[in-house]
Image 1: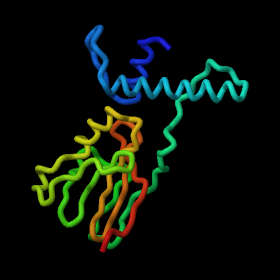
Image 2 (image 1 turned 45 degrees about the horizontal axis):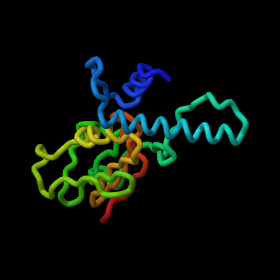
Image 3 (image 1 turned 45 degrees about the vertical axis):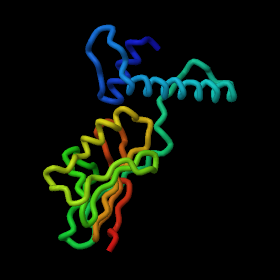
Image 4 (image 1 turned 180 degrees about the horizontal axis):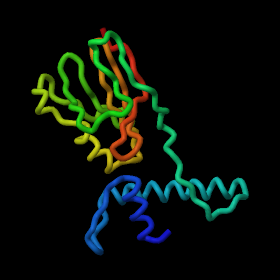
Length: 169
């Protein structure tokens, strides 16, 4: 693959780009490229075992991606609606319940307790960081008294509902 094709594929998959000619690659691009090379090596190894053509390379979804589920009302009608896709403007508030973010199953971010709602960070804050490490399993966990939900990052600015529940009360 030519360098231009790789950069275009990177821009398409991550939404991240740089416009300067001969600019140094970003760390996000380098990590993404390492992932592409690793996937190519895995495919070449698999192809050599099966006797298939060693030149074809496929884009494979990470195995940790869970299937999206439908949102809806959980608990009573006053408990709010759980969206299918998490809006990027969602505030990551934390008080009596709230949001937490995990990366590869480990805690990554929780907003300060009782921070003013309009001062709380949004999911787009996390998205900017997730774009730098798209090969990671990013999840946003909402845990309220009568409603819970888990959203998983499935690509650029796309956090889909993968689990919902009745909350912790």
